[in-house]
Image (tube, rainbow, N blue to C red; front, side):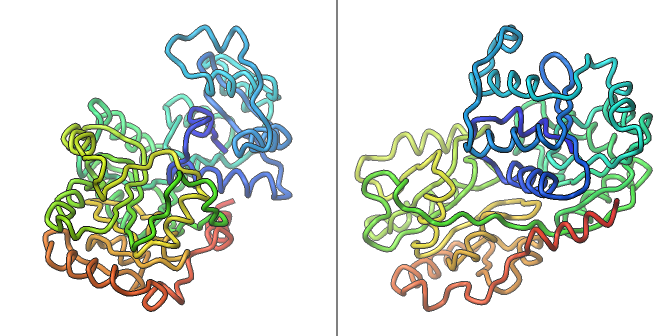
Length: 392
């Protein structure tokens, strides 16, 4: 499997895509099938065997510390300490290393009996990698999380739409199969691919969840609030529609309950950042970046409900996890959320602000246990892999 994304994001709070890549890493190091990992570093590629993958896993989850960065890791400028340490360690753990031009030879040497290459992080999907896998008699399986950059380019960082389109075009031309996290994502992605030509064989496998044990001990002082409160989870970027929630809280005025915005600041969202920076000290709105998974789970579990007004999603892990924690979920009326959450969430289009206000007012005045997502059974990773590993 390709672990380039997990390597590059060493030391950061994991996103939804990171969680998926972590789930695949967990499965592959536990399985009895020989496993290897490919990673792209600043100076070329490294390969880890299953022992190296376990050691990498232990460092990623914090069971072991990263080592000190070597000279090679310090040569490129502008990189953070965690990435320099991680690249140093994977080179020490590697069973194979090569410059980019020698990738196909390294794959052929280490994986001479044929193999399946899984890329589930949207990273390292280059012409060189995909053609080298094919040259070495490997089969490529790519998990596509969404095609939001193509459908909503206005939500993206500058300069990211074209590279994403080219990446998806390479997948359409060269992948042996595509894994989709939802029927909605497959429908949208294959519509794009048909306009370019080839549509690879595909399967749909809903994502599993890795639920942490809720632990409020990691919360900042004064949290959770004593009165009913709401949470929203996700990077503060335009697609997540935090502006909508800030508008609602302004409408509610002095009657507004606490709103906890859990997520780091993203991109293209200066107006929202300015509004957050201008909040007075006694505002009911609190920004909470960098919470641990266990602390965040505790906040969600004890909340009056999770709010998810996102404009577009490929799957929707935060509301899925919230329902599994027994929380109520109020979300935008998106087809993919209906597919994944079924009837357990409350749906309201973000154009219907009165419905959102009415629902939140009702929830803040009633215990969440009375109408929680009881009975919701989120998808298991074991079910996901039963579907995906049939490809091999």
